[in-house]
Image (cartoon, rainbow, N blue to C red; front, side, top):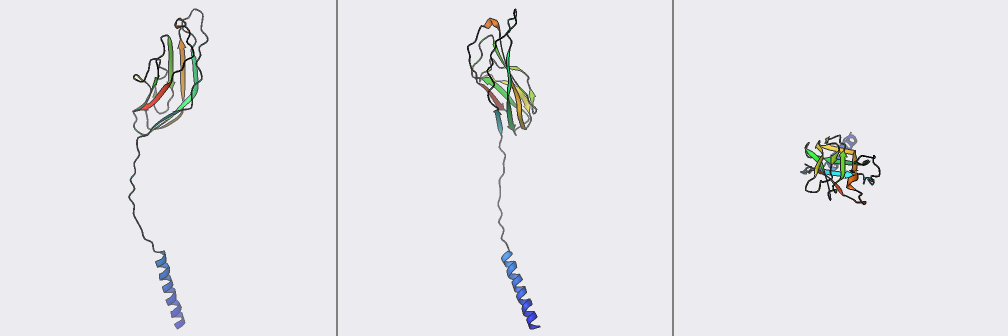
Length: 166
């Protein structure tokens, strides 16, 4: 009987030691969370060269050159009033017209918009009322047209800037 009491006593002490060893202390932390305004836009690359090389006899407007090979993607978390504007680094000479169109599943596309005279001070709206979220792999279309009466145009480049703005 003494032996049983001794064994039970050792077991109770052992359980108490195990519980003490398993006891834990706790600490609290305050975590501050925020999400900043995010405006991101990217393109898949540059379009191919737009070279006009055909027309119809008796018609001043030459056959436009087009390119639909590039795409753009956006992410924005600000508002449902965000838009994409476009402008070029220099206006086109008279008689030459560059048009731009952007597809969109998150906003309202303006369709094919003339950007020939849109410079940094006069950017034009291309997509408006863009909802929060992401819009990936949307088509970019360019159309370059000219009048025969404008003459030839040596190969020239223009930088088109797409801006995601509120």
